[in-house]
Length: 359
Length: 106
Image 1 (cartoon, rainbow over the protein chains, first blue to last red):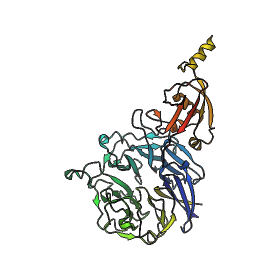
Image 2: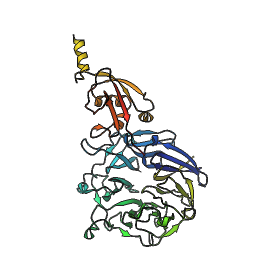
Image 3: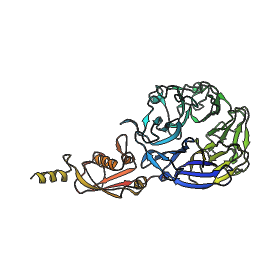
Image 4: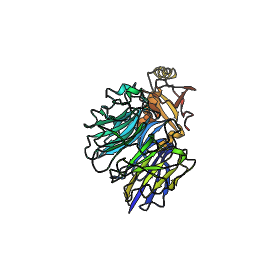
């Protein structure tokens, strides 16, 4: 019988919510990972293994792992380090599994990989060897590599998102990289420098399903779609309440569908527009948007939702979940049409992901 | 005489020989390494060697206590003779070394 796990990374560890396919009744467990700040927790649908990327003020970065759905955990950061003399890694920020390779993005921005299921790590050094590297500047959250998108069929291909260096792409397993930011704005630059080759503040990346190279990007400055793997981006922000937001989540089957949580604006407090919570959905690739707010707070909603804190599940109809800066987790079992709070008093939520398992 | 000389070296914290010390580990670290006791006896000439010896016994502990600079992590304090030690700080025979987590967090 199918069960859904919602994996929640928070400022004080990982939490797991579990339900059957009906997604009506949820059981909460946690906090795990010794209450370390967890930036991203993911599940490998093939193996059922759960991984959590953490960065602890006392003990530094680590990637945690559980092979029994959260009952027991191990941790490692062996090899998760830059060379002596470089600024040390503060935290692991993002995770992605591509075949047998586990990737971890870190702060300060860089990419590591593990080929032994998280026991040891080695740097994908081509990324930090990119000639633009000395000019990468941190965004508000730091110089962080916060999104890793493996290509759906070619393990040599990978996209990453770095704040605020932009989107980078490799087609050779990470040996060489190219910026893929054409068409995305940097409104914070002087007027004649708003479309640079790199330096854009990407907030999240989502790969559309279907095996193609359609990408969606929520940026500090706009919402975008690319149908060619990020070579060219086009704005799809018309119809949204704001050009500013953090997360984006693709539909599990429909490449035209996407979920967003726009915030009111980068200098307006960064909370729900008009303090009324809504998830916004497109079913036509961003040509039009619908606000989905049934069951969400419609007054005094002064929370934000961070860049990795929105996810879908693979059931039919798709479930959608998001976690707030105030520690609330909301879920929808009908593709966003209606929402219920699944947890309301968690620590600040950094990430939300799902894992579908058969028991 | 040889024994006395060796003892003097240890007392003066020279690099010629290991010093038997007791290391007191912080509770927050023990949550990450449930098999580790709160007090450990080991031999090391410096704080760096002490951490390396801890890592031999509990693999991964070095990464929790020192960063890649290399240096003792910013929010970890290793007190040697009542003063904050660095990796190169020498140890002397019989010392009790306190590893403490700094006041940080939120």
